[in-house]
Image (cartoon, rainbow, N blue to C red; front, side, top):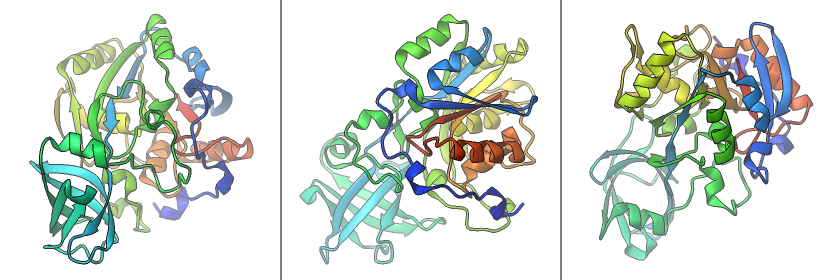
Length: 340
């Protein structure tokens, strides 16, 4: 398949620069695959599309203050990094800007010396491997010096950093939020549970796969970056009960979807932790997911490819066009789409 098949034009003013005042007041576009139908409602009405016995799977990762601003020790030149993946101990894979001068051996300083780093190596994806030096606990130093790494298309300063976290975020480690879950409130989740819907939490720490653009014309040649996931025995047990009961399993976000498709084997869902580089695009045969809740994604991205694979490319692209015509809000702080 060609990359151009996943392109569309989005008026810039439809890129949401801030969240809606109340999480569940965003809009919801519902795609019904079998009926080939598109419906429009508010997110808080999602409960009307769920039935007792459904299992809703949510990613409980928490975004860390992964963006750091510092200087080169030798020249004083400014540098910006985004932490992506912890390798071992104090060694991290990062994105660096500007990257041309961040060669192995270069030393970086952050927070007037509270945190220092040495460039050790290049990564296959064009990032760097840094080794950090500091006093105390790394997470505490990071909380003092780091900032929330909002996507580059969000130009407005976020007044409440917690609005870029889901209300159930708890496992620290992401460089970006699993944005499909941003619409839920504690009360809405409670109402969903009372309806008889199971809530299952798993973890996928969002890393380079979110930031890395597709640069090949033939999408099959694209290689996804590995991202860390973990699934508890109790989560796997609940999923397997849903499987046995032939109940719907609905993934909240492309991250949850990718984990579910990674851990589903012939004998069911397996608990555990590891790294996944699964790349889902049209033609993929889904084995775990019966429904998908997601936001609207960038053109030519692996995320829109996954959504097209699940919902059907023609129907999904038609839904995107209808969302644009109806002035939906797009991307991280935008509205949502439910595909059933």
